[in-house]
Length: 323
Ligand code: NCD
Image (tube, rainbow, N blue to C red):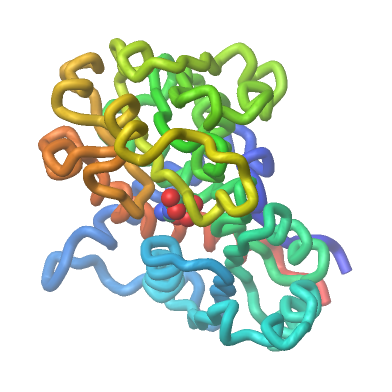
């Protein structure tokens, strides 16, 4: 059997050309996901007869729904399994659960798990293509791709832009995938958080490439200064268990690192504001900014469907699978 699977476990599975290709395919699906009624293009069928299994061991609203919609928009069958309802809750290993799903001829398995490395374990155990929908604090590659698509749509390019990522960098798989993706596409990246929320060596996760492109700052004003894109992160308190306290309290964090109309004024006048969701209004972002004219947060969600259509096609439509 030749290995024809096209897993997407990390942004490092893609080079810049492949990323741009996925963004271009995503662009071509934008009308299909944003127009309704008579305007809507005819139903697409490229994945007809294929099966996508969403295996989610952590909560999700956007990611799971958009993978399901993406699969259905392309004519595939989509099945959702939540972790608490699966046999891993009865002691089955993750790899065994995945092998069982694989035996039902899944073409793609989309997985979210609190263990960083879960997607890779599954990718090594199954014939289906595996897509990482977020593994612990490791990566969330499709979020980075949909973020890149949103930026490109608004700014016309990614190369040469100043993108600041603000907030809980310590626990954020979104930040890690975005650092890798944005660096590959030629952006300059600023990471902005209190020292206790910046993991040691984060600027080196992509080796030389990210070392050259990432700068760490500890004052919000310095992070925002002249930025083209402001990306805010939620404090992932569910991942804090057993850790020493990283900041005095939420109010203090919000006062020093929260995005408000006042602090947003440090960014470029045409800067866009992004957030992967779920937002904690009044903590990392004020309601005025979240609902303001510069926020593109709900557009990110729409791009999620278009980009995941492109990612599913890449995963599934490979050369004829050898038996
Ligand atoms: C993020 C995640 O789950 O990593 N959300 C998402 O996928 N849109 C970020 C978060 O939970 O804060």
